[in-house]
Image 1 (spheres, rainbow, N blue to C red):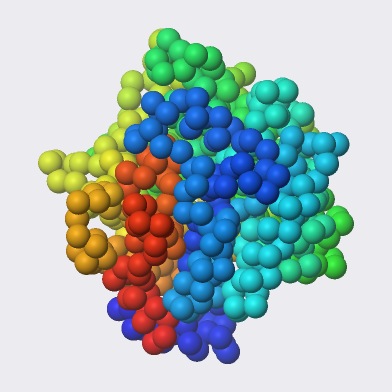
Image 2 (image 1 turned 60 degrees about the horizontal axis):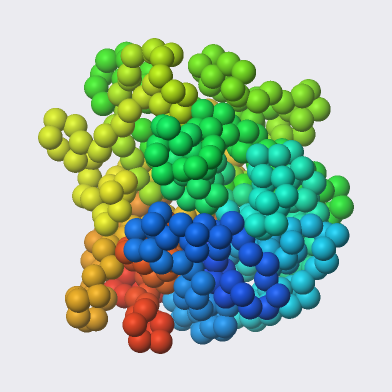
Length: 488
């Protein structure tokens, strides 16, 4: 199974036949809010969120130090090189480049130097940088000034930020990703309030002091799409011709399966896919939101002007897909009573259990069940519905509980992670054989890390990080397996 995948990869270098030309490791070393007070960086909404609301973190932690990859990036690049991967995906922190969020506030030269050093270190070790421009760490100054992504003012400021990145790093960076998971930023930040900036309808969710769970997620998503389109236009007009790079966006969705064969559940599975995936893919490929969203939401769903629609349609050279899990979907009565909320707007609920049987083994996170077939099904759905775009799997992974009472030797034996990747690579291969245009695969993640509102309670890494002993890194069985996999 794994051997066949690896053998075909060797041939691909010359023939570009079946499998991606990049088989890569997604490493989260720079997508996390580390070294938050160093190098001239301004505060982000995640700095504020974790400091002001530790009760929203499962372990009351923060990412102030995290893995300290800001200082240890050379060590981490060496780990990637040892594994034999050929690319590294990381994000550039907006407030590290523009500390107050705006070009008028000045460019932080220390921040530019840090990313130049990282990019050069990657390239000197044979790794291509895949750079994400927004991974949720909005400058706090823009949140304070005009509400961040609730305001259309953010579009110009984002464009100014990415222009600095294109200008400073574009001669070496050939793959740009504008936004990582706009779905999660919009819904968990503005519908449930579980992540920064922690907004939701107070009476509805109970853990927020301000927000509107029935309107704000759609406004925030709308402005992310417009900011994405503005960034892509800028890159194509001014930089792509000389830099010869590509630009796209990374989306995520659970793969949904009807709970039963009833029409209600079949329709429900499609409806929730539209609310999770079509919400972004439909505008990117067709210029407007899914019809069912417009029907159910009415004027709560913003509208694109004709010019905006033309700008957004086709505004990608590739789509990044983050796939982790699948769930069963079933329909709920179409009733418009009650408080409006993105979570219930689709009139769909989901479960990981059917007839008493889980959809797959459960990981440490309550939302993550192992379902490798879902990566194939999602890719083939995308191929069929959205005209087979170029795709990179930009995240795929599984976590275990962070139990520091477990001896190190035992903690390194992550057999479940090996089986997770073995299964997903098999179904990725099957999707490619059926014509899905997949160009690369990134794992989440190189190192155990700060996992947003889960803090340090779970471990996603292929390398164990000892948070109590100087952040020492140790390869798990999965890291050794993947290294051998790439050498076949």
